[in-house]
Length: 351
Image 1: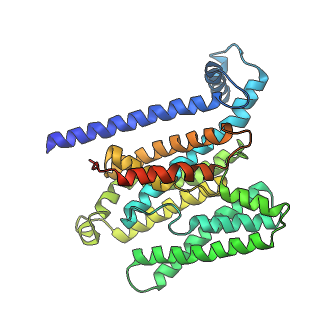
Image 2: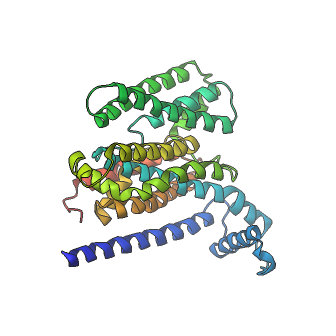
Image 3: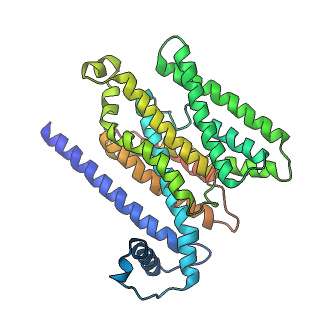
């Protein structure tokens, strides 16, 4: 048993290290590809020079400028925000999916199981209909997502029976109502201007990301991800069942509520800045279970790393495959659905 445990631990560490290394490589590679090519070495030099400048170390370690002003503009102002946002969103959606699947003991659970995405879509569509700016559209999407979850919790608290089941049923009901509201807003929207904008937002995209958006997105994501990581071992205990977890000293209701709130927060932040991106939070945790097993101590960080890599690769394809950018939500569905079918039809067992 000890040898098996050591083998499992070594495998988890190996997978996590490899996942981190692949993420770094894909991160750097993503800067080099695009309509305006930038050599990989120049990308590294530009990023390192910007780091030295921000930290004030450029006076101690001066660097010779071997790149053009156009290269620096493309790398820092155009590609850096989008690449970092893709990593943040992919990481957050995958972590939320893994957390929801553990909390609800349901392999089909995804970040939008409680209707957060539906509320965000309604908020964004309403803001677009009112002619709001891009920043207000993001804020409205975030508020709509949080409002949805509050309503779901209210329904679950007032309904008799098991709270976990009530949460899922409440999410389906409230999400359906907000979906109906979004459909009505699309119906009354100006078909020449507002309707295309709403439709494009619903398909998901990272094309409008700016440097100033990164702190606004990273803060709520960090607030949600840190507790998820700290409580990931308690997800293992929740999977044993209500009575067993309580016998082991776990305050199941409190832990479950904290996990749901944190997973919802990162989902709301992700959807607000990226639009509707599906399948990431459903497929990536399943892939990680095949690689690393069902122990959430390794599963959650693995999901975060591979989720960030996956969405970053999909975004690279989105902005480079055709002359016109493909909405990222379309690509995640095209790639995610067949891949999920492959994962669930495999006969191999997880460790």
